[in-house]
Amino acid sequence: MDDNKVIRQLIRVNLELEGLEVVTAADGAECLDVVHQVRPDVVTLDVVMPRLDGLRTAARLRADPRTHHLPLAIISACTQYEVDTGLDVGVDAFLAKPFEPAELVRLVKQLIERGSGEDGGSSEDGGEGHRGGGGGGSGGGGDGDGGGDSDEGPGGGVGGVSGGVSDGVPGRISSGG
Image: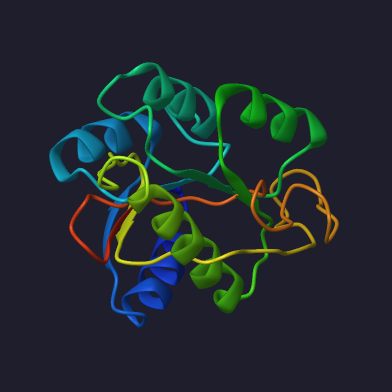
């Protein structure tokens, strides 16, 4: 999930090149709808979103018994407060913007592998959903939308920031924005 159409397309294209199915959403409210319809394997979220931001979307996904197990990643230029809040609500990983496409793919594949070991890996999306893979991500720098991230900060690897969702179909991911 990302409100920026260019970022949504970047996420989509890079994950589809890896054989993943991607579903996107432009904001958190749309993401919640998509996740419940598509049942993705992973959900990626941006923090700053219209209507319902990524952190509140993550909190709602964690509070819902149907989606509490769904791997969640924040893809954003986050402040330390946003990273701490994300960890508090149960975000699994963070990837800092700007990010390298290979980092995104690695992170999503890691999350899919982790999620498939739990209850089948079905998940719901509120943004971009991705199925069939996940990768570890690390990244640094900022994206100009409010605060830069260091290599080991919010964008670094699992526990970093990312946006997207997987719907349970192998290789399908949902992402909003």
